[in-house]
Length: 113
Image (cartoon, rainbow, N blue to C red; front, side, top):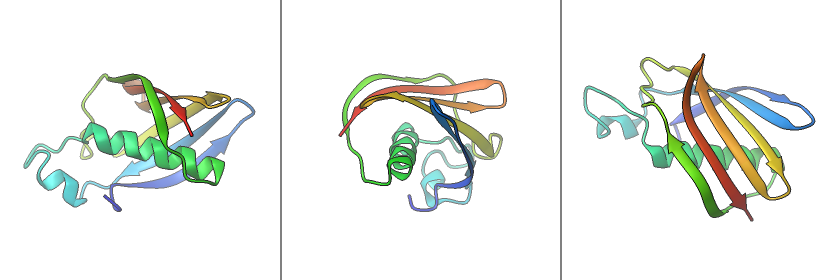
C-alpha cells in the first residue's frame, strides 16, 4: 500500500488543512479490487486519512474511535485521479471530507491518540 497515493500539495489555515492527493492507479491494491474495474478500498482511504493527520501533527496517530464513516461514492483511480482531503479538528476529534471536484466521496469523524 506504499504506492497507493501521493500528496501533491498542502494548504494550511487556522481551522483546517487540505491535501491535494493523486491516486496512483498502478498500485497493486487495484489488481484485486477489482480487476478491470478498480475501486479504492475503504480501508486504504481510512489509512490515507490517518497518515495525513500524522503528517500534519508530525507524529504517529492511532484512531481510538470512529464516530462516523460514510463512503458516499466509489473512488475509481482511473476517473478520480486527483482528490481533495479536507481535515478539521477540535482537540482530539478530527473530521475528514474527501472530494473530487464537486463529488463528495467520503466523510469520516474520528478520535485520535
